[in-house]
Amino acid sequence: MFAPSLSGLAASVASDKVVPSLVAEGISKSFVSGIVRTQILERFSFSILPQELTLISGPSGCGKSTLLSILSGLQPADGGRVLALGQDLGQLKSRNLEHFRLRYTGFVFQGFNLFSALTACEQVKLPLAYMGIKGAEANRRVMAVLEEVGMSQHAHLRPTALSGGEKQRVAIARALVKTPKLLFADEPTSALDASSGQVVIDLLHRIARDHGTTVLCVSHDPRLIQHADRVLVMEDGAINREWRSGGHPAARAMVGADTLK
Amino acid sequence: MVALARKTLFREWRRFLPAVLTVCFAGLLLIVQAALVLGIFGSAAIYVTASSGDLWVGYPGTQSVNLGRPIYRDVEMLLRMNPAVTRVEPFLWVDADWHATGVGGVAVSVVGIDPSVKGMVFDHMLSPTLRQDLQEPGSIVVGKADLGQLGVQAGDHAWINGHRVHIVAVIPGLRALGGVNVISSLDTAHNLDPHAGFVTYYVAKLADYAQAPVVAENLNGNPAFGPYQVWTAPAFALRSQLFWMFDTGAGIAVVFLAVIVVLVGAVIASQTLTAVVISLAAEYATLNALGVGMPSLRWVVMEQATWIGGLGLIGGGLLSAVLLVVAHGQNVPVAMTPQVGLICGGLVLALALISGLLAMRGLLRADPASLLR
Image 1 (cartoon, rainbow over the protein chains, first blue to last red):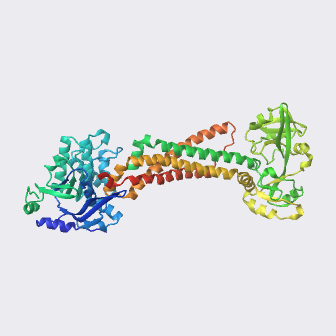
Image 2 (cartoon, chains in turn red, green):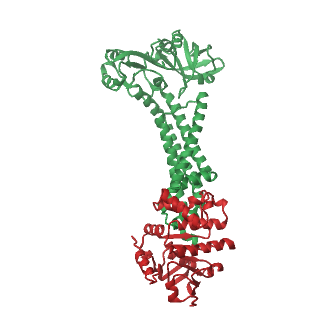
Image 3 (tube, rainbow over the protein chains, first blue to last red):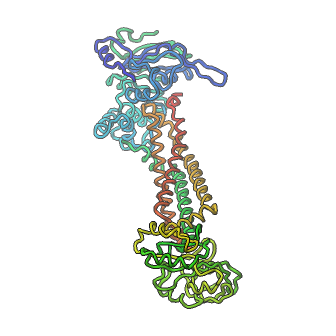
């Protein structure tokens, strides 16, 4: 079983010592199509800090989505290891990995993926039952996160009655209701208009700041770049630029804002 | 707990409707087929089930009522000597040739019974007045469903083995499995074919019906009274029905058809359910990404399959009930017992659950990593 060292993480943050919540150590990944083997990632290493919105940007096919799926435990790396909250994901069996994701991670996808038969309230409440949270506590949590994403007035509406931006806010509430330590977002604004995209960006940023959540976002949407605490630009399976404009105070002091690597 | 399976099913009922209808019609086929089998093969034992006798005594090894052979009249003494027996009456079976105006030869089974008011054979079907009418020599009763085949109406005359007979009444529910049943008095039946013997069976009434198996066992095995064998009425009725069902191959055919119905139904229903599961693959994959395990997602599919089975069963049951009532009103031989009804219901639910198991392959598309590509 896994045992993330969250208490150690909190203690280190309190003492201004920056401890990464997500670490990739020499991970490699390739795909085989017929007789052609394509190397996506090769001995890739980096780390992400809590309480900030980290954006991985880059052109299509550069490997950013593959990186996100490996870091979030949705698929294994061919080599290297991923430490999430101090836990080596490669050491977890499939069921334990699902349990880890249930307890500690949230996901937001480009396509919303809401059940058309459920109201916004039910969409958000759905994962809680599987965490064993039911009754009044579940209702309290659901209404709180819907309020936080500005959807409490639309709690009774089904997806067909919601705009794209509203659907994405419900999807964010569905991820947030679990109070995840890690929140992964894949192109969360790409399908949204300017104002809706801005609302979603602000929400993700606020989640990182107010909840202390590690928010890792993958996108090629330039609007997100201005709002991310840290930006990593990927090309051909490697990070070729990185800069920081906010985030954890200790990290800013250590690395320096607007640092171009 | 959010009832995802139920809410999806009821909100998007149009997508699930083909599966529900498949289960519904599979249930209808199973129930109607079972009802026809029970009705048709149940008529093989109509002589026993429509009578109030507790014991039937016939030639040893007789496999069905219609295959009886003459037994010695001494057997009556054996029965009367037993203190548990309160009444004994003979039953004569005569295979004969029917002829009526405008109708060629028809093979009929003449059943000679004791026409007295206290008579046990067919006392569930014949009123005391009708039994009195049968006491008139040459009087017979035929089944309503056989009138077309016999070419007569109540009150008409016809000829059996060349002897003129008078149809004194027509009654429902007398349809025979292998031919046409004609009821007459023992004397009339004997006169129609003197070579058929005097007695094919003896029917006995006991003071205490619960003692029937014990009395039957005690009566069996006394060679001094010639060849005979004693059965309880339910055992003899079942023996006759099983002979027709399985020794003729018809029963195996019915079981085979039931298996085909279940398999075809399961495959068709699973196709619909799989299509629905695949259409929700992204949503299921998102739940899996959020940590909801595959066993929980499989359970959602099985829950939907159970709903489909339940709704299909209700629909099939109601349709079947209407059809069987109509069929019964049209003299079609149909019958149903609680046990057979439960078996049909179980098969319908099994069909739905098999379709759910088959539809689980749709969850293979619910790979959360695929949402990131």
